Image (cartoon, rainbow, N blue to C red; front, side):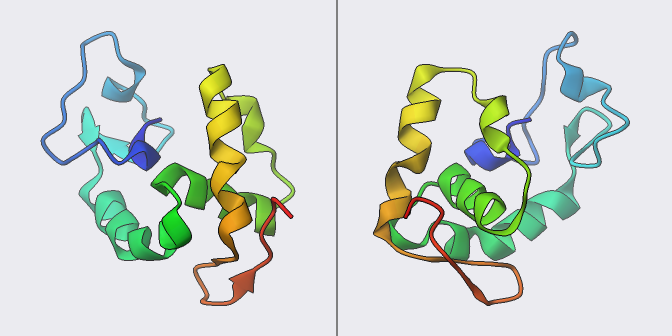
Length: 107
């Protein structure tokens, strides 16, 4: 819902018709704004996720694919997203939030 794009700040506002204005089921947004606790948590792991030249979203996807059976590719909306996301995985390993190295899903 945009948090991993790195463009959402505590000051970010959304149009009235944007789902993030009223999304009660997703705790990443509260009262039409990004949840500050989620932004703080994201800031605390940003360096790990963006290691080896990855974008924030690439690092998050590498972590998900390296640790989980979930397939985030179903959420891609453009051809550019499909081609850009795996691009950085060849640059090495990613670490999980517990500090353990995860194998690079692109290998």
